[in-house]
Length: 333
Image (cartoon, rainbow, N blue to C red; front, side, top):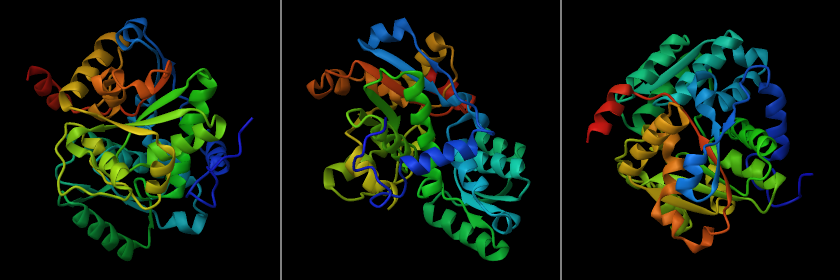
């Protein structure tokens, strides 16, 4: 039974009702991803870990949930003009694939420094690539130009009710697959994923803890939580290319209220967590996807007495679209 709490739609961009509606809408298209565990990793962490494998989702990442919800919620007149987004990776591919399934055009603005493997996914799924400079201003200006020229509908990577609701379906699945979970650790960037997960999870179990995992080189969420307002960084520096965005005005209130803490990890910890996923879980994850495991194994988490009662931890392995050349180079360092 879902508890009545502060997670209502009059306060936030999404709620448990919009998440459940999203689940019905996208279920014909998505994979219900598996939850896996490892006694070896449990021993290393000193806790029971449950890995939600969104790296096995269509498109290779959780982003397909939100993209599908956004695109399949459009009416026919809206859809006929297509969709446009700006993204450096997994959201771009997810929008391309969802648009392909609906049979509509997808215009994808991609920065020139996007990982090659993610650009190839966009092209594979039929997205029309428009290149931009690697700045948010350039991305947004190019997307606006496409909107004006085509009349297409913008599907923002995270600052969108439909996206947040779609990502929240992860909680519905995870807490059904492993109901004993008392804590969920989620990567944070723009906040669409963790906002949806937090809204869904805390509606089902208000006592559950939701923790964000963030790279030290892109720690704007931690700074924002400390400041009580959105903090943006002039630049980011992390191997986790999917975690370089800043919080949006729709995701920030949810993160501020419902995310219990932010765990900061170094890139070397992320790389080690990737290695463990490959060697022990036998799962291919990208840096952004491995950061949850890095967080639970970090000293900052293990030695924090505030989390000593976190015994059953769900970890969202958010994606598996890794640039293998970058991976091999990082492992050699």
